[in-house]
Length: 269
Length: 232
Image 1 (spheres, rainbow over the protein chains, first blue to last red):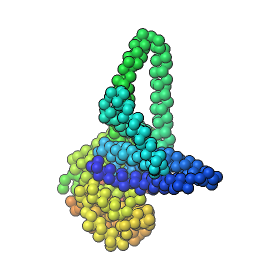
Image 2 (cartoon, rainbow over the protein chains, first blue to last red; image 1 turned 120 degrees about the vertical axis):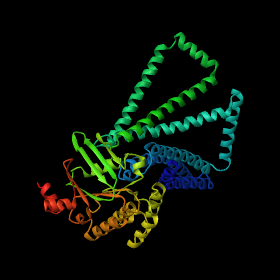
Image 3 (cartoon, rainbow over the protein chains, first blue to last red; image 1 turned 135 degrees about the vertical axis):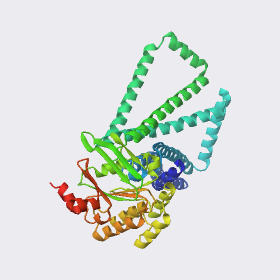
Image 4 (tube, rainbow over the protein chains, first blue to last red; image 1 turned 90 degrees about the vertical axis):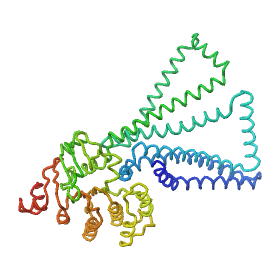
């Protein structure tokens, strides 16, 4: 069922996101074509600067747009008039959330890849070749110097990226779903909940920093810092894994709250 | 006849407002039942509860002996009182969706009805007229071989010819072993097709009788009784 739901998710998302990606690639291509006419003239400078700025904006807009489209799709498909069909399909609420989440994460990753490819188009030729060579060199030598398993790092980073994207979507899904509990101003309440959570998170971070600052120069902290200094790469692994676990717990909590509210407190207008 | 729908002490509140107050209702299979009441009486709330779009604050609902959930959604065909389809999709794609998720969806029947009405299934639904959008929704709902059809205000806000088409579509297409719940406040046009009627007033069930009982016991038509019960 999740696969079937995702088929319709992708179909809907593609209709909105693909035109944006086409615009992005067109701007990248235009930028590359302009570079063929390189000269010292003012006209060329105006064109290359304008198209480069436009490309930068398009890349940013493409990522934000994809994110916004995925969120709007979740809200519109579940909690507006479309919800009358979506939520009467013989599918569990958990599967609806999974389908929306997986589609959104995949669409976001594809959007990042599209931005990278647009950059590749704009820098196609020697520049792009040099960038790739430099990146490959840096990564290869990093693993040699640190004597670490490259595959392990890549898995950790990928897990971190995927969970970061998923947690952001799930947090917003939770806020939108909790917002549906209100009789009116539901979107406003969803925004309120989101910023409420953000403020609470900032307070927790500040408290953590204050505690860390208070404990500075104590034997306990010094021992930790010494250990980190002598085991820098293990520390890096621990940091990656810790953040991954925190994000996983955040995803789990948001998923369970969203599912619970949908199952027990659904209140479609 | 088996019991298709059972509501026991069903209660739903919106904040301080009690939309449904302790409704007890039993509907048998094979009948067409009118859920009648003025605007704001609780008809749509009852229908949303039957479809799992709201969760009751008290009491229970069972459809074919099952609590509301994925299994009941397989056997309930629902037509909401507003447009519920994705207007960026075509009727063709919407039929694909119904085929994918509802095992009881009869695509041939739907295509036949679209062809009879001359509705182009290849254009986006948003480009259809309001009347045709409503017909698309009705056709999709009635093309299911469901056990319970729940139609919320299917004849409200349409011209008399469309009203006739809607009523005939319902009568010609529903599974004869199924029950059909039709919520409306336009009674005269639909009275002749109803077996039973349920009157809901301010969230309370005030009457549940067969149309024949009303005619024999009260000596009135359903429309006349409705006007009497809901007189201001």
